[in-house]
Amino acid sequence: MKNKKQKTPTASKLSVLRQICNFIPNHLVPKLARETKADEKSRTFLPWSHVVALMFAQLAHSIGLNDVCDSLGLFSGPLSAIRGATAPKRNTLSHANQVRDAAMAEKLFWSVLEHLQKLSPGFGRGRKGKGFAARIKRTIHLVDSTTIQLIASCMAWAKHHRRKAAAKCHLRLDLQSFLPRFMVVDTARENDAKRAREVCAGIRSGEIVIFDRAYVAFAHLFELFLRGVFWVTRSKENLQFRVVRRLQRGRVGNILRDDLVRLKNAGSRQDYPELMRRVIALVELDGRLQEMVFLTNNLEWSAQTIADLYRCRWEIEVFFKQIKQTLKLADFLGNSANAVRWQIWTALLVYVLLRYVAFLSSWGHSFTRLFGIVRSMMWRKVDVLDLLRRYGTADGHFRFRGQPEQAYLPGFG
Image: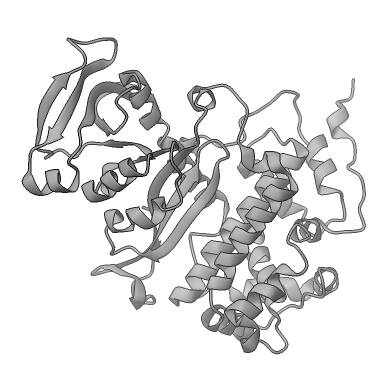
C-alpha cells in the first residue's frame, strides 16, 4: 500500500524562500532601517534586499560573497517577487555588511520573534511533552556562552590569543520553548562572569536560571536572591565555606551530601551574606558516574531535583551545536566586527523562522533534516507547510532536536 506521505505536495504561486520571508512583517525592515539609520547608507541596494541576501546565504550555505551575488543574480526573477528584492554586486554587499549598523539585524531578530509569538501564542509557550523539564511549572532559563573561531590575521578586532581570534555569544535560552530570550555578541576576551548581570537582567521573580561556574559572581548571585530568582550552578573548586547544617546523613541514592553552608572568605561573605545550599551528587556523564558539586539558593527543593535541574543545562549545548551544524557560522562573508554580527543575527533569524515553520507544520523530524529540505527546495513553488506535513518515509514521531554527538564542526569552541 502506498504511503500517503509520498503524495506530491500542493503547488503554490510563491517560492519556498518567499513563503519564509513573508513571515517577516512588511513594515518591519524599513522601520528598523530608519531607526538604526541603515537606510541612509543605501541607494540602490535597499535594507530589505540586504536582509534577504543574508538569509539566502544562510539557507544556501554560500561559500563567499561571489557565491551569494551570482546565485541571486541567476534567480533575479523569483528574487524580485520577494517584495522587490534585488541581487547585489559583490562590493555592494561587502560594503553594506561593513557600514550598515548590525543593531538593525539584532532588532529585527527580536521583533520577528515577538511577532511570531503573538501570531501563534503556542509557539513561545513551550513544548508539551514528557521529561523532567515538562514537570517543572516555572520558566527555566539556561545561560551559557559559545566561542566562534575566526581568522586572527583578518580580524584584529577579535584577538583572543596570539594566533587566534574569536567572537563569543552569551545566550539565555528558554528551556521549555527552546528559543533565545537574550543574547550578546562580543569578543571572546571578556570573562563570562562580567556578562552575567546583563544576560540575567530580564529574569523575573519565581523563575529559575541555570549556569555553569564560569558565570559565578557572588554579588550577582545575591542580587538574584534578592529579586526572588532561583539559581542553580556548579561550585568552584576553591570555594571556602563553613557547614551550618547537614540536611542529609549519609548517601541517599546518587546524593552524597546535602548541606546548608555560609561563605568563609570575608570578601565573598560580604558579596553573599546569606546561606546557600551545597549538594554533592553522582551524575552520569558519558556512561560513567562522576561526582559533581552544586550550589543553589533554594532551600526547599529535594537534592535530586537540584542535580536534575543542572543536568538540563546540557540542552543549551545541544542548541549551540544544532545551529553550528546547520547554519553558516563556520566562515564569514566579511572581516569586520559589524559584518560578523550581521551574519550571526541573521543566522538566528533564519533559525527562528524555520522553527516557526516546523511548529505550523507539526514537523517531527530533526532540525537538520528540516534545514536540508528547505535549502534544496528554496526556489520551488510548493506549499512549504504541506510539503513538510507530507514528508517522510516512515510514520511516527521523531525528536525535533538532534543529538549532541551528531553535531560536530571543526573550528568551534
